[in-house]
Image 1 (cartoon, one colour):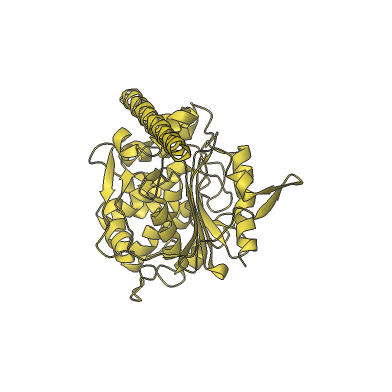
Image 2 (cartoon, rainbow, N blue to C red; image 1 turned 45 degrees about the vertical axis):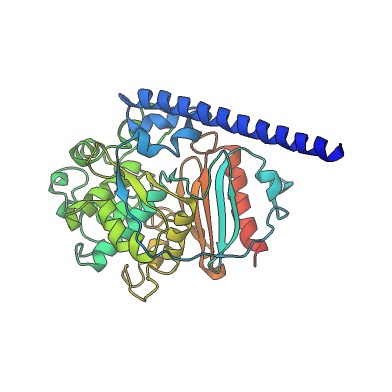
Amino acid sequence: MRNLNQTVSCMMALLLWFSTSVTSVAAETALLADLQKKMRNSPASSVLFFSEAERRVAFKSSDLLYPTREIKAGSAVYPLGERPTDILSMDYELKNRKYTLNDFFKMPYSMGFLVVQDGNVLFEYYAAGNDRNTRWISFSVAKSVTSMLIGAAIKDGYIASVDEPASNYLPRLRGTPYETVTIENILQMSSGVGWNEDYEDPNSDVARAGSANGLELVDYLSQLPRQAKPGEVFNYNTGETNLVGEILRAAIGNNASTYLTYKIWQPYGMESDASWMTNVPGGVETGGCCINATLRDYARIGLFAMSGGVLADGTAVLPDGWMMDSITPSKGYVGYGYLWWPHGDGAYSARGIFQQQIYINPAQDLVIAVHGNAPTAVGSEYSQHLSQVIPAIARQLK
């Protein structure tokens, strides 16, 4: 009788789990359909004003909500070993209070969290039905990828130097505040041209033109006022990173997704196909935003950067010293390089709103990749926790 009762209990639990899963999938499907209707006549930047539940669905469904271009994986995959490590008992401190990572993961905002050290996966976590095959939106993590593609274009001879004026590649910028702004100025977000990056203001520049590309982008930026000399003042500007994408396309005579596919994605051995948001179907990629990729492939991006852009066979994709230049603090702001965030201790990161992140610590051969759905684009309590969690992991893995 006891065995029968145990069997019945197990069956009931299984049925409850199945029923809950079906209900959850049905709810997500209905929400996705509503989002598809909402996005038909709305700019991509409207995602900034989605609810938390809407973002949870939208961030893993970009290919169904926006036009994208495929980034195709190759046949050879860069292998990641497995070395399971208990990190949940690790501790960190925030505002004079101690927490453990177990406390951190009770917050409902980490959709994926991956720790890779010495080429081995130490810890892998997913939530809300996500798994290792889930493609999640990068937001501004794409900026750092675009930066590496500029490096590749220099290595390939398409661009002479970051010291060139951007107008050499985009003649429409001549006669505008951008005429003498160099590629390096734009990579360091120090063009001196005014831009409002307020994610909560529907009338800000980022809300109005943060996903613009092509002539629309160039014409919008050309009308903005100059506020400082080029190279002097840092001002975070998604529009200008989209402009970096325009420079890249003009230089290589091809689209960014194809260049990424054949310079990095396939040669380095990314495991899964990815995609990159475009302004219209068949259009141009948003250089400052919105690659959609799995968590493991985001970690591989980190490993590629940490290698200095060198493939397994020794082929250098990036110029000698490019990554060091990329994480050298700029004159305008010590916390920013060539679309990368240097930490001042040799570590650096690629970051996106709602807490997307690739953290890279060469001294420890450590990469941490995060898929996030923070309650606000920036400045949330969750982001404060994450800012302490990542260095705490690095310290305690030494």
